[in-house]
Image 1: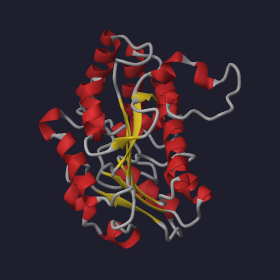
Image 2: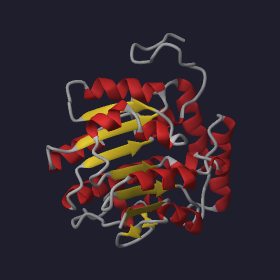
Image 3: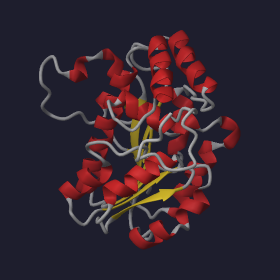
Image 4: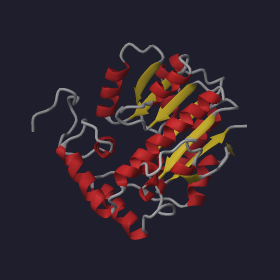
Length: 274
C-alpha cells in the first residue's frame, strides 16, 4: 500500500498498532486498514469499545483540570497515543498557561504526529520511550528540560497499563516512577476490566484475544490488581471507580453520551503522593 505522508519511514504498514487502533475507535484519521480491521474484530467481541475510549478521554480531561486546580501544572503522560482533540497540553494550558507537558509513547506514528502538533509550543514535548523502562523516561532530555521533579507532577497512565504483561512487572515500573516524584504529585490512571459496566467475562476474553493475535496482549485486571498501582499514594475521593463516576461534571445533558452503559467499563482513579 502507498505510505501516507504522515507515516514515518521504517514502520510496517501491515502490522496493527495499539495507538492507531485507539485512534480508529475515536474516529481519527491516523490509522491504516490493518488497524481498522483489528478494531472491527474487537468491536465484534464488545461493540461498546468506542464508548469506552470516549469515557476514558473524558475522565482524563476532568483529571487534568483537577490537577491544575490543585496547583499541579507539570504533566508526564506515558502511553499518550496519537494526539486527538482535547489533549493534555490543551486542557492544562487552558486552565493555566504555565503548564508543562511531556508526552511519552513508543509508537513512531504517535511520536511523529505529536511532534507535528506541538511544533512551536515551548512548554510541551514528545519523547519516544517505553513505560517498561522508567529510567530512560526520567533521565531523558525532554523531562530534564520541561519538568522539575522537585515539584509535584501529575503522572498520567491512562489506558496503558493493561498493555503491560505481569511478567514485565508494571507495578515495579509505576513504583520507580512514583519514587522519582515529589510529594504532592498525582497518579492519574485508567485500566481495562470486566468488573465494571455491562461487559461479560466472555466478551472481555474476546477483546483480549483480538489484541493477543495482533501481538499486543491486553489484560483485564481485577480491582485488587489495579489498586496495587496506587501503593504509596493516598486515593483521592471517590477512589477507584468506573470512569464516569470519577468526579463527573456537575451538569450533564439528559440522554447524553454518559448514559451509555458501555462508558462504565473500566476503572479510573487518582492518587496523591504524601
